Image (cartoon, rainbow, N blue to C red; front, side):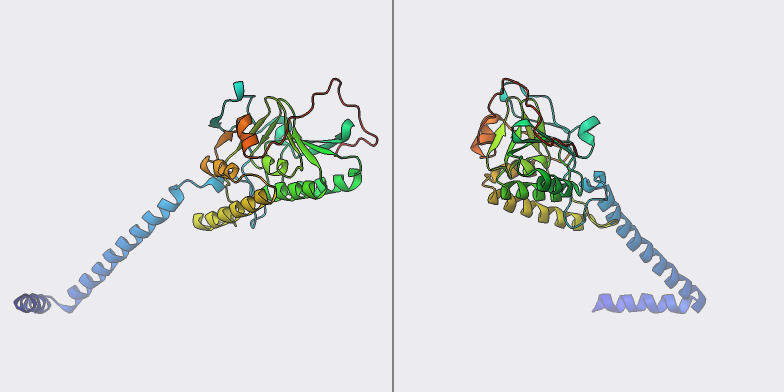
Length: 282
């Protein structure tokens, strides 16, 4: 009570000793100071969002906002003695950076080279519609790309009962293993490289990081459901989610088998395959 009385006494003395104009200036200055403090706190919070790592910053905006792409990865040289390692993810170039092309060759093999660009699943479906009677195996050599298209391609491969294959010394990284998982039989050649990393979300332009995180979680759930449908051990996806998007987790051959991603090795061929009737390039 004594403290309250003292405060009132000081306030009354201040009001009595200052004209109204000075009091108003003091009140206005106090309001400006409080506003500046609040704005500074807000700006600090915004800078925290901007300064935080944003994996979507590297992803092209043409990917569908409801189902993002995995960041494209370029595969690595064959690993000695099947050694597993997490390594930096270089950017694709040359043939691997171009949209995926399809070429039907002998032995019922459809060769798929290049990046899984948004919309490429439609070109793949058209190729299957034209050449499905000849296709037995889809042979992949890709740095990955659009998750949407990878899942669509993988489900079509399973629907058509095609096998999938990664030939000796070839690569399948990022979202490419999702396509590979669609094969009813999945063959991995000697020194072939299969690698994965985290999903990077693509949201609407100007979306907040937490919105992109929601999208990334959604696509992660879809990928897990798909892999379960394909009979793949979900520990495969754990490795992907544990690996930063700028790195690549490369599997050992025995891991591919234990996770049921690889079912068998390709049969060695003594001669180069001859073109099948109606060989085309898309």
